[in-house]
Length: 96
Image (cartoon, rainbow, N blue to C red; front, side, top):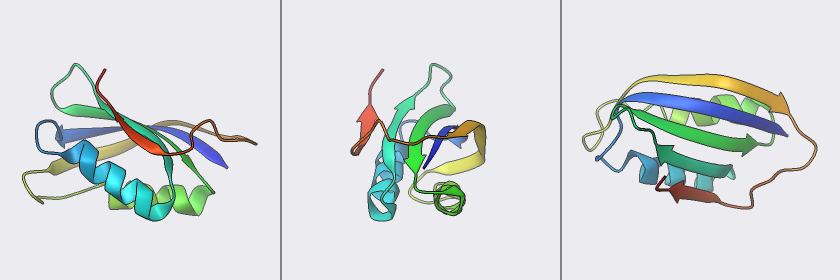
């Protein structure tokens, strides 16, 4: 299992980006959460994926270009590590 911390930046706040990420995560079986950061152009995503392949697929899927007002300029994995047991059982939207 892979734990990753991701920052997405662009037009990602106030356009239902976190909801889109949650929908993608649920379809892919990815657990964790997404939350807005104080910078109005950034969203933090913490996730647990089965393996590197799933993490790559997830980061590609959330790299949304001009869909329903969302425009992601960059999806950056800021850290990742292998873990034995996941900490999350679902994917949530956090508000702080």
